[in-house]
Image 1 (cartoon, rainbow, N blue to C red):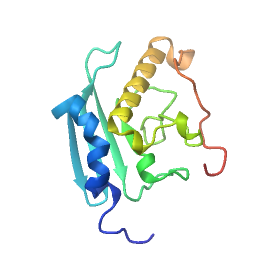
Image 2: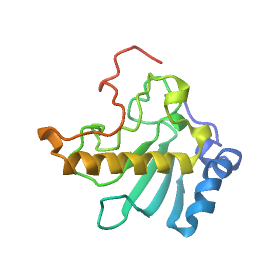
Image 3: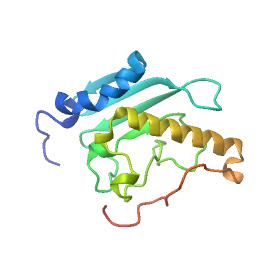
Image 4: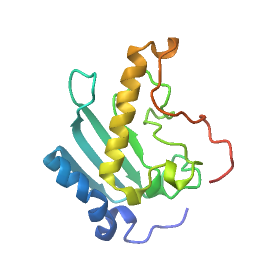
Length: 159
């Protein structure tokens, strides 16, 4: 593992400011940012999800050197998104983060950092709604997932 340059993408205002701009305009102080030497954390105090009694807090973690597999994607294109820890879902990663897209899909079918934080939060909100609906319609006993599904476990080498 080589050393990082003094300015990794998460600490670079030329990357971070455009990335978060639309989300901060849309949500204002509901979105907070914490920058540490080699990770960047965005927190939303609570997305409003149809079918839920209250808002659902969401946390987005970017790592300069992720300890998880990014399946050949750049770390900024494969952050971890956490919400509703421990709730049943057919689409969670082993660390309980949301499985939001299949890394082997073509660019137009998956989120990338160029899409920005607002698009990622919208994707997370959709995912949380799909999980809620899935649980309300039976969960692991035949619940319905409202979106297209991809296989779990990356099968195709590197994208």
